[in-house]
Structure formats: structure tokens, C-alpha cells
Length: 357
Image (spheres, rainbow, N blue to C red):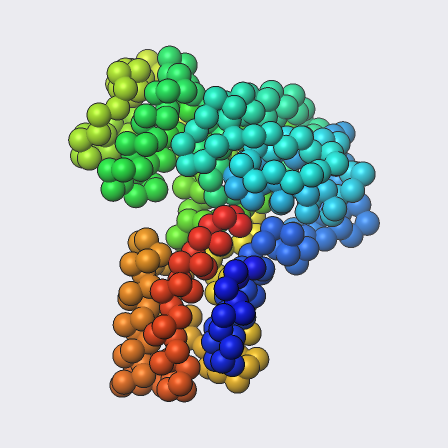
């Protein structure tokens, strides 16, 4: 898993890498699904909630994200013959038996992603009141499931996405614009599935696990508005295509429908479960360190910056611990070695966890 693992031969070096490896493996969809979901007779059990599969005429699985195919494969293994079919969109395909795995692109949406998402929406819209729609929501879903709104074409979405990513806006601001240029984001997938029962299994790559932000919240009521989207464009002085500005202004003037709000009917039939997030990896890494005789301290799962920059902060904390015992008294050798390892460790962990989700 770590290409240069054998280049480190000291026990403390190996331990640091073992912690990383354990964290990555703990966050992989197959591991997460196996630990979080089970089948008890005819009931699918998750978070002490039970869904009696025998009550539904048809059970479909749809979704999108970097981890969507691996999650779909794991769910196939749990559900077996209960699963009737479905489709997921991803840039990381794996072989499945009942689910069609369709291509998309990340981080900038592509025409093949548009075609795949159209297929996903058609299958979702076919669900009836007595059906169960299981939805995999994973990081990368915003770009992998593009569904341009009326009047907007793919090139408009691509240009808008590229400029949003480059302007310094945070993910919530980026998604406020994306949702109002889309027919799937901001709760619109839940709307497409109505009146079916919808269960979302979420693999979070977002700090704080905001369901309205992960993959632009396809199952979550949207509290942002056309006005909010325009505010992002204005504040960051983004030059977006004319078609995007026309839609946002028409929406602000009430000429285009807003994204679904919390009081709308479809959300009465929607439940979501966060199966994995950044803490999933951190807690497993800490457990491995604890079993090796250390007293691990999880500083935070909420740092927002590039991994290479975060690594500098973590090295500073390691140095402070070695010198002053703050915030934790270290085994000195371990923290001296951590100063060498942390830049690559932080980068590997951030990149691999993001690719898993």
C-alpha cells in the first residue's frame, strides 16, 4: 500500500507507517460496509435501524463518487438476491454483478459523466411508492454526476467548475453554485426518487460531515438559494459563462424553481447514514499506536488546507511535544522520527483517504 515501506527499517518508522496503513484500510468501502451493515433474515440493519426488504416490490441501488463502485460491490455482497439492479457513476470502476458501473470524470465534469448521470436519473425516476432506493453518496460525486440544468451545457459547467476551484471559495460556496446549475444536486435526486423510500449510505470527505455539502447533497434539502450562488460569483469576481449567469439571475427573479427545501414532501421518505469519515481512519490509526504501547492523541479531524501545508503544522506540534511536553509528553525517539515522517505521512493519508471516499 505504501510504495517505499521497505525503505524504513527502524521499529518507530514501521509503526508510523503501520498506523497510516491501518487508517487507510479502515476507511475502504468494503471494510466499512462489512462493519456497519448486516442482513438479519429479511432485514437490512444499519445504526440499529432496520429496513425489512420483504416489504418492497423492488430494491435499486444508485449513486456516484470516487468510491461508488467499490461501495456498490460491497453492498451487492451484503444484499445478494434482494438487490434487483441499479447504476453508479465513478472514475474508479470495479467489476460488479447486478449494478451497472458507468464512467464519469473528476474533478472537472465530462460528457460521459452527463450521459451516465442521465441513465442514473432515469432508473431513479422509475422507482415507485413500494420500492426501496439505496443511494451511495461519496466524495467526488459533485463532478462525477453532472446533470446540467435547462439552458446550460457541459462546457458551461466545466468552465464554471474550473473557475470555482481556482478562486479560493470553500466547498460549501462552490456547491451553492453547482446546485443551482444542476438537475441532481441539492436534494434533486431525492425528488427524482419520490415517492419511493430512499436510504443514503454516505462516505464523507467533508469536514464536519455536512450532508448538504458531500457530493453537493443529492439527497439533502438545500438551504442555499439562487441569491447565495450569485453572491459567491460576485464576491470572488468569477467570470462564469453567460448561460450560467442567465440561469442564476432568472432563478433569483423567480423564473426558475428553487432547489427542494426541507419542508418538501420527498424528504419525509429519505434517511441517510454516514458510514465513514475522516475519524474512521484516525481512530484506527490511534488504536494501532495504542496497541504498540503509545498513548495516541487525535488532535483534530477538521483541518482545512493542502496536505503539504498541514504537514508543516503537524511537524511543529511534534517538535513542541519533544521540547516542552505540550500538548502531550512524548517518547522522545518517536517524535524525533515523526519530524522526518510527517510531511510524507500527512500527504499520503490525505490523498489515499480522499481517493477511498
